Length: 550
Image (tube, rainbow, N blue to C red; front, side):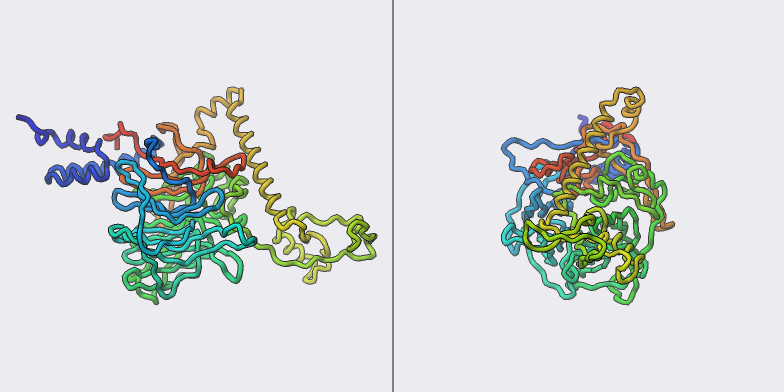
């Protein structure tokens, strides 16, 4: 009598490819040596066909539907996510009202089920923008940020330097105190190399103000201490919100980032670790990477996480090209207005303006009259005050240098005057952001409803700017020749409906697919409602009917 063992290996592999690549496939590998070999072939072919599907633009978007009685995870963005075996772990994050969490959720990638873990031990503080990595059977959580409560008023944002380790097997949090810890940091990145966690960049509080950094700190998880390595003089600019990719145990890739107000970066840097990572005297080498075909780079990079798939880096963004939308070349970074004007509920730290004393107008040039309303002070005719929003601090500084060191050639011009409303500038910026997003939305709708044949033909051949699509960076020669190349984006053959463009979501690599979770929608109306934040899980994979397509 024939049995399943009599099937050819090709047929057996096809049957096993229909099994979940997580716990089910792991159980099949334990049947016998023949099944183990077939399962290994299934894993390799899943990786190959997924990489081929990404290059061809033939991908499938899938979001699981949960039962009505299931308790979903709350909506959030700027959370911390990592994958361990058959599970995805999500910690913290915040809502559109800047309410932060300290909960830990477990998502079974095989059955698509959320479970909130009721852990023991010392819980981390509620926070977002923290880094979380896996090491052995542990989750290592560092840093983060939280918004203060409403009362008392005028509180500053809180940054953390907390270091917590979660024991996956023991379901327990433990807070660790190691010497040499970095200052409170948020928006940084981290990867694990052997038993050392390497942390780069982030936002720190320095001398009473928030500023980005380009420091590198290392945590020795075995020797239980922090140390700061010696790095080369040429290094990336200070930044946060970037992506850190582990190429191997000796190389780290830093992609994009934000250095502050109107300082968005699309550059790529390679960090080479010495052979002996524990040698405090060895220098770590930073190298700038030359990027080819930069016109194909994503239009928005700093808040879109990157993920390594094979010999490529994948980043999800809208279909606009980098050159047309502000990616530009590395020598002259042109930032698109839609990226520069972030939504009001997305964390973009403000840059404190220098305290500049108001320069009085010469009395002989302007007629001075008493203020009859307030019965105090004076006002001048013919000398309207300069709008502080019309000139930046850098412009005032340059003009001051041209007019003389004492400001004699520029007295009273271009200087921001104190406002009665302390938040007047931020309110005006918020209104401008809303108007700009509404204008872009109206233009997009007009393009979609255009009646000309040329517009209709172009809409069929070119995906809409509001459609998410994968962008691939070829890194096959990045270590040998210090070069990378962007592949042209293509989503014409995609299956399923991709989610609306999101900000500050998480993107991790599973077994033959990418997993996208959370984020905040690019709401053109600038709404602050809870519905603008997502808790959806989206799988990006190759089509299920392309198993034998390599």
